[in-house]
Amino acid sequence: MIRSDILKDILPILRDQLVICNIGLPSQELHMMDDQPTNFYMLGTMGLSSSIGLGVALAQDKTVISIDGDGSVLTNFGTLPTIANNVANNFILLIIDNGSYGSTGDQPTYAGKKTSLTAVAKACGCQNVVECKAEDTAKVLQAAIDSKQMTIIVAKCESGNIKVPVITKDPVVIRDRFMNAVRA
Amino acid sequence: MTISEKIVSDLVENDVSFVTTVPCKQLAGVIDAVDAEQSIYHIPSNKEDEGMGLCAGAYMGGKRPAIIMQNTAIGVTINTLVTLTQYYRMPLPMIISYRGELREPVACQAEMAVHTKALLNQLNIPTYHFHEESDVEEFDAILKYTFMCNKPVAILTDASFWGGYGE
Image 1 (cartoon, rainbow over the protein chains, first blue to last red):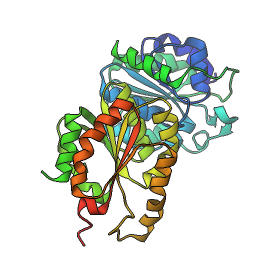
Image 2: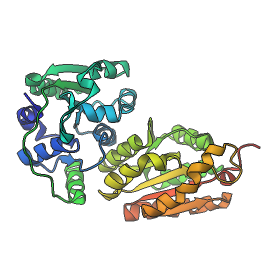
Image 3: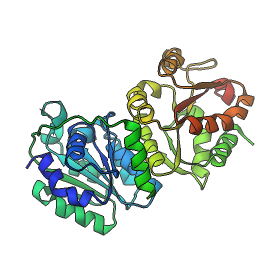
Image 4: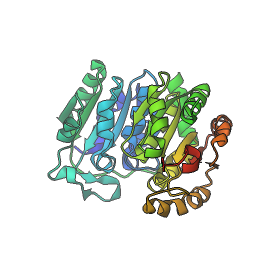
């Protein structure tokens, strides 16, 4: 399975939740498959999906899922200690770990080599860290939502991309409808 | 009321309830005052762009955010300011220690000081420079302006404003 297969599997779960989606192909795939006002698409700023998601989670009570990638977490490694030390039990960080920088041509990341993001998250003090196979992601994600405990999921999958159009929505429109969905 | 207490009191008065900080010797007093204020969620960040991500999220979640950082952070955060805060039109008061100005003891700090205003100007970020202690009187109006126009706004606070480095 590749990232877009995981997204397709978890669409029914994501539909009812606030989702912060990582820059590049992950956002474009989610936007193409199931655009929802509860989705915040990152059009720029690699690495901040987890930080934005934690901010949303700390500011209100609804469940927030940040969809991130291994490369993006490596870009913003400081996020993991911040998450560990600011527990928001309505926050789930889903790291889709395909061991590569998918949006830029599948260059390998260190997470696909010696570095285990699961071990790093645990070492940073994150308490509920679950590593799973791609095909188990939906089950693990639903369990994390039901647990009402802040959870970091590292879903391991193969690298590879599907063809998707870029997002042409205006950023202020994306932000405004997301904020309305938060308030709804 | 100390300058730090006045800054935190204005934050509270303007419903700012989510503040991220990156440490700075010059800002230690205001960071302590933020931490002590019950109505503010204080979340230290490890890097300023991470902090701006947290603030963007908190704003979308319904809280008014602010960031406290050094001017060296402008060098770290240009991409985030442009492609997140400005692109999505989000308000962000940035309380910045203007290191490398008069009375600065550390030579290297002057290197970013000479670029600070030029960079903020290039980014079209409204910028206020607190030099005299009485300049803090404008802080309340600056906060109101920031949340009126949904822009990042810089408040540069130099060593003279803070009363020097104890020299």
